[in-house]
Image: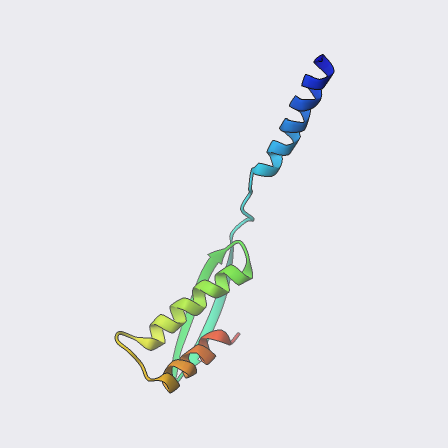
Length: 87
């Protein structure tokens, strides 16, 4: 019985380490977007490039879109620019 309890406690303590999620160290990423003579430079801190890229692309779209609605062609142009940042 004592062995069973000891094994159960050991197994639980080992598995509880997996529950602790450690965020990777935030790193700063730079993105540059150009459209119609305007340049937008953004710096994002995130745990991964993909996370930083998603945030930057959303901010890019909001910046170039501006307030109100845009035409379908302009929207597609903005999406193309924001999906392909320049270095």
